[in-house]
Length: 272
Image 1: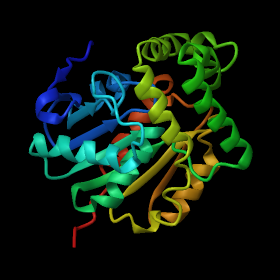
Image 2 (image 1 turned 60 degrees about the horizontal axis):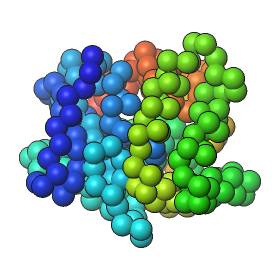
Image 3 (image 1 turned 90 degrees about the horizontal axis):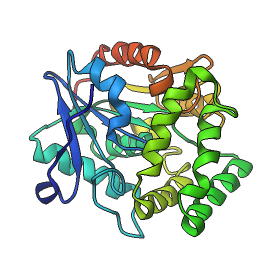
């Protein structure tokens, strides 16, 4: 079903969001180039038992464009402001790709406001070759814009050629990329390309249940990255989805929803 968008730019300093269901709060943070509607399969599933808040990151969807020197702390502050506006003291925070970096940053800097944190398809300690590739893509976005990188992105996320079973998801993602705020996308991607080390050594500080989950066939947000993060975050959970790629929340939504429900059902850690 289509998602109802509620944009409250003035009160939230330019953050667009949608709210669904009732119960314990779950916040969903999308990846770079996307918008909050990319979470539709999870919203439809989780809002049966939870209050689900999905929003557009800075520079995406109907949210405001970030400054050129935007930092990861700015994206975490955007979420804090949204929770303040909605009078939500604490929430489960789930992020995908760039959104996973934001979710982890929020959990580390606002532990009292984070019930549980899940990082899906997160990047961590890229190899020199991976770092060079992503920084080259960031430079291409700044120089030539979204359209020149669109087809390579679809191929990287879904395969070349795109398998028939993934065509619908690929079409959805392509539509989001075509509609993206070009300046916001480029600035956010620059940050994404240089933030894979920002949480190295800090994940031991997570004071809540944590889940690291990625796809078996996601080459750039690889299983080894999620495993390394999980090893640092004491007591965290690690899930690798067989045969899944980067956009697994769309392509493998039933398996992802099952794992998210399992995680959201785990006991909370009492706040000190």
